[in-house]
Image (cartoon, rainbow, N blue to C red):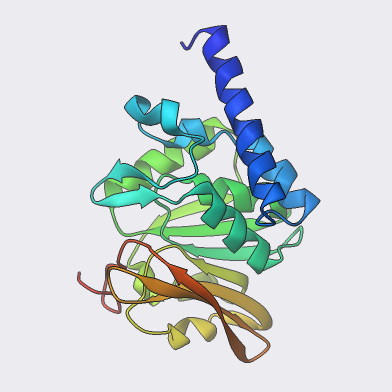
Length: 219
């Protein structure tokens, strides 16, 4: 068990990070601020990287995957404009951190369906999420490049890995008034796009790990 002073230091770093993101205009809403202060990112990173949990950078979580940088998690969450009670599809569970953020906001009446291609990552994320009491997250081992049509339609879709082309097939899994946030481009860098109301808006360059699966870069 970490010493009390270690927990206090992590809490201090978390607060400093969130304050920085707020000052930079990345965190815009009170709900995203409150949620990112509540969810302990250090529990979603490998033990040897805990001291870097509140640096604003991505971190490796094994199997060639990463946990996104906090500013990117905040930005994508803000763009989704989440509401309590919504059903969300997340493509790419990773360590489960983004799923926890989503679950906090949609609440007990909402549902986060998080799809992960790598079984080991899915199992570890499920363990962490359950240990923290997130019973409104369904972690599924599946080819997320196809979405998860079984439980459609979704109020929101968030893609946390790079798609080689704009995933128009996922729009069919959205409700008519739904929103989708997705990085699209090469396997090295992409642009972040938001689909809403039949329109697509570009939010600039980003860098995500490449999507795996039938509609991804490689199986």
